[in-house]
Image 1 (cartoon, helix red, strand yellow):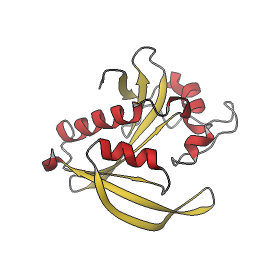
Image 2 (cartoon, rainbow, N blue to C red):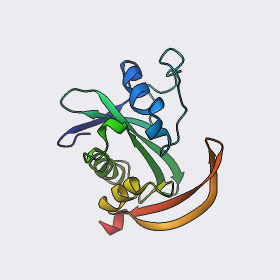
Image 3 (cartoon, rainbow, N blue to C red):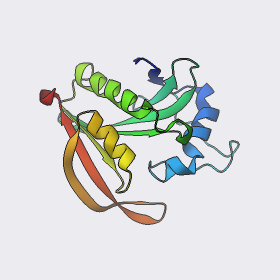
Length: 165
């Protein structure tokens, strides 16, 4: 999948260092995106990521470097949930919106999903804005849904349906 500035494709063995720096070791990202923290590149267990059909790299088209990821969770009955994280060095440049728009198109047109959900931790206004720019609407609030970094965290869910397009 491509956009004007990005390529969305499979995670590769060669992505380990970029994934580490932009996701698993980026504390700003880890405050907003559920992921295992890695202290050092040598300690980072990357072995389960390449080849997964539910995890996609967000790459700069110009360089091919991984700057973020998209994840897919099939909920059954034509519905799924997506997640996305972009390295903090790439925030506020429109990359997340560009990637999520293209990913939604892929999910509706190529994977035949009818409903797509996404969620964010309260206070993560940037992620909420990405969802809204991509046509998603508020669905529901879930109190203390997940324990992350030792804290019971609330989630706000947004949704988009194929028949809204």
